[in-house]
Image (cartoon, rainbow, N blue to C red; front, side):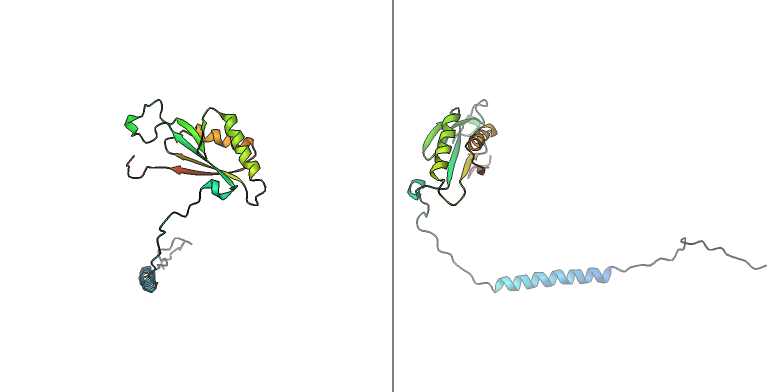
Length: 173
């Protein structure tokens, strides 16, 4: 009697193999090509020497007339002192706000709001949108920044920019 075999569908041992070696070779050749092409293109760029300014181009805010912004500097209690010299209870506290060389006490919310409102009214005829720029360093607690943001919102100033000093120059804090 003849032997019969039963083949089941999908259980075959034979599969399709895909050789990845040529694709990897082509990929490495493309990487080398782009590195060399980029190097040759950058060698062809002209070496430009830019002139350094011999004096500051900054103009004081008072000389600009009516600017479209007001800068609020938040000065911390620690100031220029090292972190070890600052009382831990004073860490993060602000001394005062400074707007155009005018000091405003951190508890004087109405005074801050009045100055921001006056500046906004003075700049209302300008075509550019009026905004508040808040400057602080990493030692100032957020509550003082929020204080300025709330005052700006109360006088309907919608645009606020932030500048923050995260680390002092020359220190490893």
